[in-house]
Image 1 (cartoon, one colour):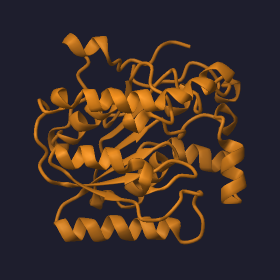
Image 2 (image 1 turned 30 degrees about the horizontal axis):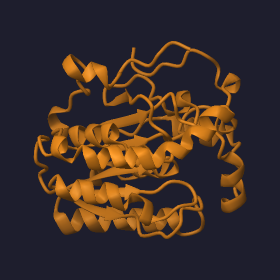
Image 3 (image 1 turned 120 degrees about the horizontal axis):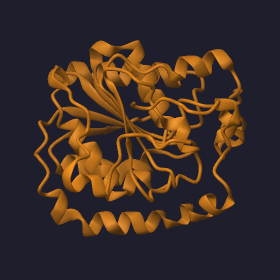
Length: 261
């Protein structure tokens, strides 16, 4: 079973005050990534294909710079989303993202991988649905594409900065549907912003979930285990795509079967 839900979405609750307070550990995750650089050098080299990285709610491309530097060092060609601060799907944002994906795909003559952090992952999934011919794979980090908006600690901020309602049942059903390309959701049960159940893909031939322990929401894109999983997924040939292998030593750090609630 890969990502089936065991309780009703309406029963999900946002992470509690303790987990929210522990979001302050993000700098330590980045420090761990710096210390893990020799380990990263053992990863397979990338094939130079383009990767667009989408930031989370209310932040900009500055927050994804460490991840893009990591991807460049691994042999990929990373790009920022170039839409300023992510204040939700305001007028022109989705159109700008579609143009960016198409232009980069045409420039490189190959499909683009999309990596989205939090709300950025929701964009990545929807773009892959709208233009699958331009997208190689989708990787999301703590993205709330499933479940009720109140199962996050950010829905009020989303409504404030975007001017849009987060409580549209039809939209929620649309967001839950996985794209028709290889799609990986990376999540953590210690996420202090998004209830981890909101980041679970339902069963599907090209959809998977990877749990990383002890990752914060704010620091997920800086976490060494998350970056390792991203590099592993980007190295997959889409035509021969296989699920993440969490056997052997990896089982000490990753889990691919969502825990029962």
